[in-house]
Each structure stands twice: as structure tokens, then as C-alpha cells.
View 1: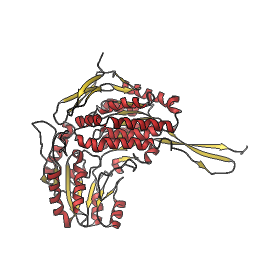
View 2: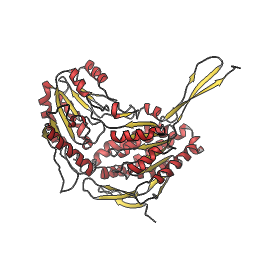
View 3: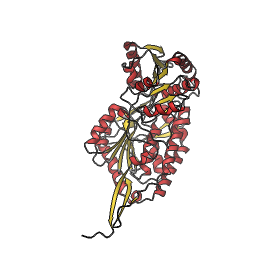
View 4: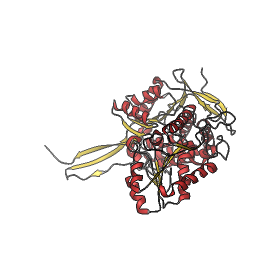
Length: 500
């Protein structure tokens, strides 16, 4: 019999039993195949644990469990207020275990533990709590037609939802998807990213402890080419919600189209950060640094193209370098002083360095960083990278790197700033820095992005919709818009006297 648990002690002293199987029907169960996924500490390159990977057969079991739970009275007939209590309890349990969950995410993701405790886990808790409040406030409407008809709508769950999350914020991304789907009464099969397979299995135990009926939430690990494909194409899955690269999003959409599944896609970005000459320069530098260098640059909305009005360009570049030198302290996850940890994996590390090489070959100026930065000869660390003298035609200007990698370029006037901000196939986020209120709103309206921050960056909130345009995605997460994404409207016509 394969052991389904392993006792582990995190580097900061938390000893716990790590589940190694799949969370299906409220139990940790053994996968049907011998396929495995190994979690590696990106700071030391040491193995943390090896978990089981779902096969197509396991995916079918999870989907079948979700379908059964969807139709079972324990979930189907559960009042919204009672559903809200379960979701709120789930949030409470995450909060009670936040130090352990933050430790696990920091360990296999590489993000600083301090950031996981201050941002990732608290935001996940807030998101789940926010959506618990919506569970009994989802309703249809009555529609006035004629005196011989009573017409109304029902807003009902879509059904079985397949959710696929990325590795950059493991638990937060899970919360963004689980919260609205549960509030609306759906059942779920969620697949975690291959790079960060650990915390999601702990989350499963909290799902069970919160009191959710078996099969409502199923959490699996698996390789995208097998488990991900099987999940997206499964005939009993009614909706697919995906966050990840644009290339993978296209494959997901293509596969889901074969059975006309409802889809929500949040994919890549190359977000602009536009700084006008009248901006508060000190704040612009601090926010732009956070916008690209936090979480080692591994943020889908990272403002990785900084466009600065020519009058202040050289001053901005100088101050931005100073900010990198003073703020971007590189270290392992466990030091309080660490701002930038390692990249999540060797593959991501190699990808960032390949773009450094590309930028040099394209003729841009490497103004800072761009080098490996191992600690004691280990770890996927890269010095924060700044390129200047960048042309819009260069790949480093318009392709997503997903690392501590930024291009800084001057512009002359507002129209040029808007045009260059929009000269990309992406449209996820954007930042505009100016003290001119009219200009701020004017530029925000013209930038082709799903979200625009005025005088800030990465300032997301679970109450505000999140999503992109163009090749950055379809649909919205968070806020009330996400309730639309997880419900479908049924029209009911009642004959009140019309006779044939």
C-alpha cells in the first residue's frame, strides 16, 4: 500500500503531515497510475516531497464525484445562508492555519514567507469571506410583460466546474476560483500547478473540516498534458476557469469548444506603466518597482513596460536603479529582509535568462542586473534586470517574460504614450501616474486593458473585477462580475390566462 501522507518539517519549524494523494470525495485517495510530481525548493534545489499525479481515469473519478454532489440534496437543496456558513467556516480554517499554509507556499514557490503571510494568505482569506457573503444574495428577477403572463428568471449554478490555477500565488489563485463557484452552488474539480502541488492538498483537509458535502470540492495534482486535457474535455464538465499562459489558454479554449463549454480565461500580460512629467516621481518609482519586482516579477499583471515622459526620463531611470539597489534584497524565503526570492523553477529561471540574452542581441542596453545570483552555489536567483534603449519592435518589449525584468522607454506626449501602451497583443493591466485628474481619466479610458491603476500598481481587491482584453483573457474574476461567470439564467414563462 502506498503511503498517502508524509511527515514534513518546514525550514521555519512547522511539522505536519503532507498529503500525497488526490483529494476526491472528501478523502485523500491513491492515484490510479504511478505518475508523480516532485516539489522542489527553488532556493536550495532540494526535493521537498513527491505527490501523486492524476491520470485521465482519476480525473473522471473526480468529475463523477462532483456531478453526484451537484445533484445530491445535501448540496443542491442547501439554502444559500447555510452554504454561506460553510464558506465562512472554510475561511476561518484557512486563517487558523495561515502560518503553516504560508510556510508551504513559500517553500515550494520561493516567495518570501513574510510576503506570503502579509499578502498571499490574508488575501485568500478575504476573498473566501467576501464570497461567503454573496451565497444567499443571488437571485433572479420578475419581468413585466402583459396581464396574461407572469415571467421571471432563475439564476442557477452552471454545474460542474473545472478550475486550473497557476503557481505564482497558489492559495490566492485557488481562493479566487473556489469562492465565487461555491457561493453560486457549483461543484468543483480544481487542478493545481505542477510546480506548486503541496498546499492545495492541505486545503482539501480544510474543505472537509468546514463541513462541505463529499464531492463538492475535489482537488488534484496532475500533468497538464494528461490531467489538464482530460479535465477540460470531460463531457460532464460544464465550465472551465483557467489562469495561466496565453499559449495554454488557447489550447484550453480550443479543447473546451468541442463541447461548447462556458470558459473564463485569465492569461498573460505585458502591462504598461505610464509616467507623465507632472507625476509624483518618488511615488511613481516606488509603485513601478513594486509593480514589476515583487514576487520575483512572477505576476500576470506585472507592469513590465515602463513608459516615462522624456523630460523626466533620465531622472526616473536613475531613481529606479536606486530603488532596486535598496529594496530588492535577494535572499531565501525565510529571511525577514528578503524582498526577492528565487524564480519558481529551473525552467522559469532559464526563460528569464534567455530574454536577457535576447535583449542584448536585439540591441537594447542592459542597464542593470540580468545575471544569475546563486546563494551558496544554489537556487534559481536572478538579479533584477533593467533594459533601456528599447524599440517597440523588440521581443523584450512586447513578449511576457514573467520575471524581475523590466524595459524603460521615453515618450514625448500623451497620444504617443497611449499608442505605445496599446502596441501589444495583451491587455490585462496598466498603470498611469499623473497629478492631472482629467488626463488620468482620459488615458485610463483609452488604454486597452481590463484594469487600469491610477497612481498605483497591483492594487487588486476581491470586491473589484479582475480580467483582461485581447489575448489576456475572456471574462472576469472577483467582484459581482464573477457571480455572473458561475451562474446561468433560466427564463420561466407562466401563462396567466391566455387560451387557444
